[in-house]
Each structure stands twice: as C-alpha cells, then as structure tokens.
Amino acid sequence: MAGALAFAAAPAEAQQRPMKIIRDAEIERLLMDYAQPLFRAAGIGSSGAEIIIIQDNSFNAFVASGNRMFINTGALLEAQTPNEIIGVIAHETGHLAGGHLQNLRNEMARAQAIGAIASILSAGAVVAGAATGTADLGRGGAAAMTLGPSVAMRSLLSYRRAQEIAADRAALTYLNATGQSAKGMITTFRKFADQALFASQYVDPYVQSHPMPRERLAQLEAAAAKSSHWEATDPASLQLRHDMMRAKISAFTESPGRVARRFPSSQKTLPTAYANAILAYRTGGLRSAIGQIDGLIRSDPRNPYFHELKGQALLESGKAAEAIGPLRQAQSLAPNAGLIRILLGHALLETGRNDLLDEAIGNLRAGLTSEPLASLGYRHLANAYARQGRIGEAELATARGLLIEGQVEAAKSYARRVQGKVKRGSPEWVQADDIISYQAPDTDS
Image 1 (tube, rainbow, N blue to C red):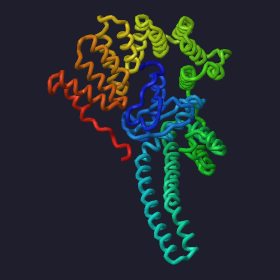
Image 2 (image 1 turned 90 degrees about the vertical axis):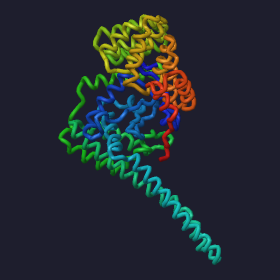
Image 3 (image 1 turned 30 degrees about the vertical axis):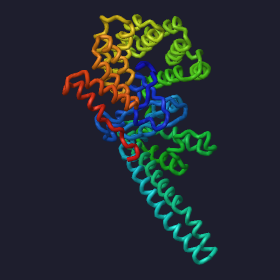
C-alpha cells in the first residue's frame, strides 16, 4: 500500500541483493528537506538525488547509480538529532557530486588490470625457477604469485581512502554554505571510529564502507571546529519532526517492547503519543488506535500525516468508506504528496462503488505522475480500468507495474496484449512498445 510506512518492491536495478524499501510521504518529505539545501550547494541539479529508505536495523547509508542515495531505518532511528542525519547526507552528497561511484568502477577495472599483469609476471618467475632448479627463485616466484591481488587491493583501498577524504571536505563545504554545523557528522563518525575497534561481525556496514581512521577523524574535527557555524543547532520545529519520524519508524518496524523502551508512556510528548497510536493500530486495537489518532489530530489539525494514518488504519481494517474522509483531508493538506493520493485512490476503489471509479482513477493517475515507481499504484489503476471495461488500459497499467517490479518478461507479455487491443500509434500503443523494447541496464558497466 502506498501509504504510511508502506513496503515496496525494489526497482529492477536495485534487486542485486534483497532489499525491503519503505515508502512514506512524511519521512521522505523530511529527508528531502534535510537534503535539498545540500544538493543545491553541491550543484546537483534542481531535483537533486532520490533518497530511498531501506528497512534494515544496521546504521548505513550509501550512494548508487542514477543519483540515488540509500539510507537504512537503523541510521534514522539511531540519529538523535537532525544534524546527525544531515551530516551523513552531506557526506554522501560529496560522493554523488564527485562522481565517486563511477570513478570507483573505473578504479576497480584498473586494479583488476594491475592484478592481471602482476600475475602474468609472477607466472614467468615460477617457470624460471623451475627451469634453473633454484629453490630460492622458486620461492620468490611463489611470493610473486600473491603480488597481483596484493597490488590491486592496495591500489583500490588507497583510492577509496582518497574518495572518503574528498567526501569529508565536500561535506564541510556544503554544511558551511547552508549555515549548518558539522557536529552531527563528527558525532556519527566518532561513534564509528570507536566501533571499528570491535570484531567485524559486530560492526555496522557504514564502518566497513566508510572507514574512519583516528588521524582522519582528528583532521576532520579540526577543520569542522573552525567553521563559524560550529555552534549552530537544529530548530526546535525540525527536532520535533525528526523525533516524530523516529517514533513512526520504531512503531511500524520494531517490537512493542522495543517501542516502549524508546518511547516510554511516562514521556508525555507528541512523538510518544504518535508511537503509541501506531502501535495500537498495528496490534489490532482499531477503536483504541482511532481514539488516539483523533487526539493527535486535535493537537495539530493541519498535520496531513495524522489524517493519513487514520485513513490507512480504517482502510486496512476493512472500513474503506470511512477512510475516504480522512484521506481526502490529508490530500488537501499535502496536495503534492503522490503516495497519499494513491492511498486515497485505493480507498475509493475498495468501496466497490462504481460512481467513485472516476475519482479513484483521477487520484491514482495524479499520484503516479509524481510517484512513477509506485508499482502497487499501477495494480490499483489496472483494477479500476478493468471495472470500467477499459481492458487495454488495464493491461497497460499492469505491464507498467510489472516492469517496475523487475518482472520484465511478464510486463512485455502484457504490453503485447495491449498492442492487440488499441489503435496502432496511439499513446497506449507507444507506451506498450516502449515496454516491449525495454532492455535491462548493464549493471557491470
């Protein structure tokens, strides 16, 4: 479901390893508010990079092709302040702006070439030792056999260290340009410098992919402390949004006991109330959940995500007709939130009322315009079209959803069926042809 903390299939290009991607309008909006000033400072286009949230308890963030930045829920939960996540985003933005991912691929190819050449040379040394019968030369040849991988690895690690230092410096530049402190970044890096002292099985992936030797941390701290913004702090309103995000992630992804430890009921705060309301809905207490969500709405009637949560709780409890009002209110308060419009379209569809199909289709199409990778939205749209007898459009929507989920052959099969039902050269025919002609990107290039 494209609603509050929904789980989505990873796009085809991201399915190299299992990843559970989380979609949530509130959290994504907050992360983009953190990131967009940094993107502008880095000169990364008007739209910047896409930030993708992964459900994973470890602290990690990394960049991938196509200006994509991935952040684990573990990082969001463990960061106590906005500035800590902003620092991580600033560092990753340094990697994006520096083109480090593509450069690293080039360096890997170079390292492999170095290893191959060294291996060829070492093989020659072994042959020479065997021909002369000289034991020492033979041992030298055996040592040389390890030269290829060793030289290649040293070359690659040296390059990675240079990339990390460059991203550090870039991050400081972006934070200064946006009037923000580097304290959060230093806090995060200091924690991982300490963690690197422990056994590797207990170390978060961020340590392994972002090694932080003590001398590098000392240099970064010295440079950061010189900034005139070193003592800058996060606005109280931003800290509240950050705490609400952490409450939401915890309540949706962690055990009730863990949520209670993070947000004990003795804390009479809005984030704690948010966590408890979500937990009540998750554990099946709809009446209690709705009462608590209504309390949240009374505390801040203009918060669209409280209305969204109420609509989602009602919809997923089989009360689609009751969900429409809160979701319409959420959509009116956050008109650009495509995920909310998709959720509203789903609720309208689930009522079973044919007189609401046009409104459902309008919301689903509008939501998918801003959220073109929300595959579940295409499934709902296909259902709505089919109920109106618009089979060609239904099959095209199905094909688009399957393509996003990486089911390429199934998507092409549906697209061919579309072309048999619509006029050649029509927009639907052309879109189907694009799917039929699709070739998966070469992830090794």
